[in-house]
Image (cartoon, rainbow, N blue to C red; front, side, top):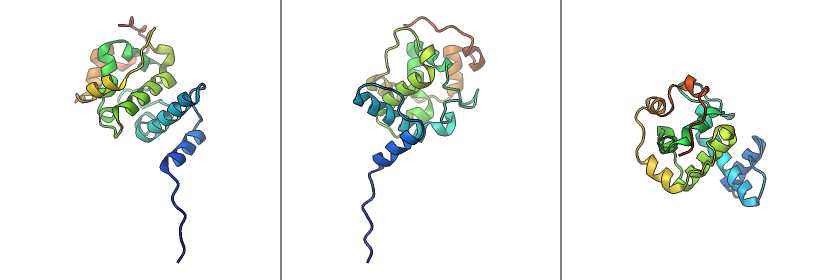
Length: 160
């Protein structure tokens, strides 16, 4: 009987996927690089199906994560919104991983539109927000920042 080799741990395969799909998003301490690689993998697995691997989305139904989305997190309502979108709130990730993923998305795709003094989302606020899943994310987003097309032409609100 032929004995098959033990399967490689999934995280090694996913790490290789991250390297093949564009490398690490940040340069710095090894922990930051590991966090960025893990967040990129989570993005590819849980977000890129709708928002595309490059974050371009399919506006207006699936917003682009490139640029203007950083303006949303300038208010407490906008910060909560990011974790309340149904597919985000119901992602099979713990609050720590989801916060890391959301922060990576913001820095990777929208760093130039983040409010001055942006404070990264933390697991506690993400966990609290995701308990209140949005029934209509498009309407909620419009109430926070206006219609999608207007978002690109608005200056970033003052940080809260």
